[in-house]
Image 1: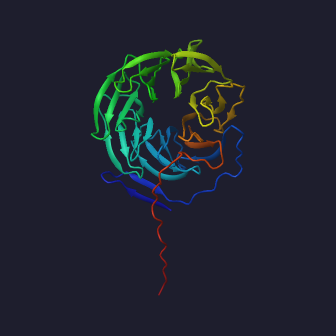
Image 2: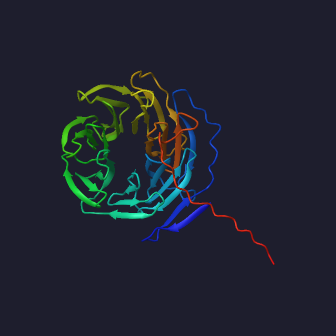
Image 3: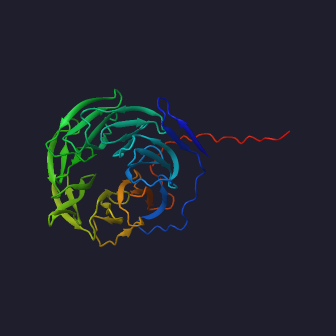
Length: 363
């Protein structure tokens, strides 16, 4: 069953799906210590738009996706049953998605949108400081504030409760393409190969690590370790580096790079079994799960994308699932077990009540 409606205050259609859960792919086989494909679904069965943003909901068993036409679609559980769909922006790439306790935030290059999980619009924020945004981040100790960064030399501190920009931080780096944090630092990456450690409160720069000669493609932080993947110039062109850089955040020094058989575009920690367990993935869909403490040779798993590029990726908070989005609008869910969960203690998800069938008889 599907229910269509309109959000108060605007005429955009909102889709809430109450279809029965589909069966899991019984043919999936999980390799020991590795990941295997559990589910694949299309964000839009009628039209193929590439997935520009992906994020697992840290509070509910939902996966949020955004595409290059401004549409946001969520999926429930490891079966990827469609839950809600709404238009966040007209003909604009969804650059980032972030779920709070009550709100799903969607970011385009020039505006921030807030919706309920059921699709109801709450507010839209735009300003002259929002010129080419690419990322947003929420600090755990100040959950009412969002940090917005992008291909611009300003980081915006935005108060969700007052819906106002409370501080504009100018950065010396060329831009701020991605944001992460741990208990000590805020981290930002840029297109000149730097990962900058920043003060959690003031966002002021403390130290910069030159990880790559070209842009940072991705980076992640876990405990005292930082990993990066990126690009370097070769023969007058930027090419992906076939290694992962590792830094010890206690000494701010690099450890020996990890050579790889491909150039990764994504790198994330998977610390469920070991604090050194990571995954790397290339834009062409070559996936490697490995342990930094062992660094034994690993053969990539090839994602079946029919030759199309991987355009987005995220890892669930439980570290049991990895979701990939591609150029054709497909979402691929990988897991290290047959019955995974996205979060260790998820809240319940609201579904619409099924409509009772009305029996009629002719007189």
